[in-house]
Length: 399
View 1 (cartoon, rainbow, N blue to C red):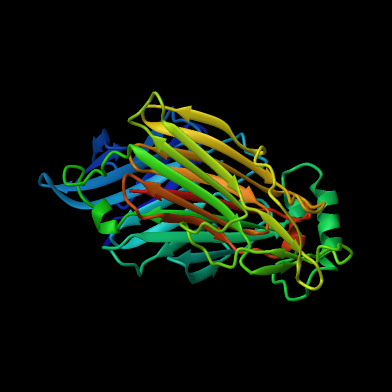
View 2 (view 1 turned 90 degrees about the vertical axis):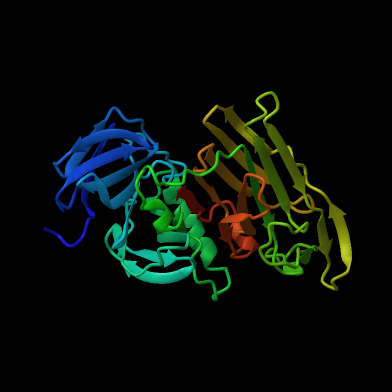
C-alpha cells in the first residue's frame, strides 16, 4: 500500500469533475462543500451536473475500523467553454490539493505562456515550465498564500486588434527609459491562492471548525503615485512635473489618485451596499518646480456596473476610468469582478494599466485586519498610453 494518501489525478470537463486517489485501504468518504456524496472502497469519484466557473471544495476521508485515519482536501472548478476574452483569468480552471505530505497546485495553461514563477508568502520558490507545482516543505499550522506569475506578448492576447496594439506598444518602448525590466508590450498574469492553515483543513468533517458566517465585507481599491514629484513624459508640455502621493502601499493612507471603497452588509438586505469613490487633486509644476495649476478630475467614470446581492453570496463588477484634468492624457483604467460568499470564501479578478501604483485590499467581518489582495508598482506615466499591455490578476481562497 502507498505511504502517501494523495489525489493522483483530476479530470475537468464541462459540468463534470472526476478524480482518483492513492488506494491506502479502508473505507472512503467524499464530501462536497460539507455534504456527504460518496461512501465506498473504490479510490475514485466523479461529480456531474456542476455549474461553470464555480469553485467546489471536496474532502476525502479514509476510514479504518470506523476511525478517520487520513484526510485530503481539494478545491477546484469545472472547465468552461466560454472564456472571458477581456480577462482570461476569470474562467481559468485552477486546482488546489492539500494533504499532509503535499500542497499541489495546477492550473489551466494560458495560451502562448511557457514559464511560470511560483511564490509562497511573497518569496520565490521555483520556476516551472509545466502547469503544475507540488510543495512538500510547508508549515502545517500557518496560513499560506501562493502566487503563480507568467507573461506573454500582447499580440497573443485574445482581445481583438491587439496585433496593431502590440506594434504601437513596441514602438513606444523605443522611447521609454532603458532601465525598465518589462517591455511595454508584455502582459503579466498573477494567480493567487490563499489557504487557511493546512492543519485546520485536514480534519474529519465532524471535527472541522466551520468558519463563522461573514455578514460584512469591505473592499478597497486605490491608485497612487509613489514619488513626491513625478516627471511628465511629454517633454513639450509646460506642465513638467505632477505632484505625487509620496508613500508606499498602505490600506489606510489618505493620499491617492483615486479611491474606491465598497462595504457590504449581508445581514441588512434592505440596504446592503455602501459605495464610496473619491479622486485626489492633480497639481502641475513648471520646469522651476513651482505650481502652475491644480484641479480635480471627475469621478463619473468610476462605476459599479453590476451588484447582485444574494442570501449566500454577493457579486459586483467595478469599472474605473479617471483622467488627468490638467493635461491631455489617457485615463487610469481598471476593472474588477468579485464574488464574496457568506462562508468566507471569495473569488476576485481584474486587470489594470501598468501605471500608476495599484493596491487592493479586502476585510471581512468586524475585524480591522486588511487582507492584501493585489499590489502593483507603477512602470511610469508613459505606461498609461492606452496601447501598453495590461496586468491581470486573480485572488481566491480556501478555508
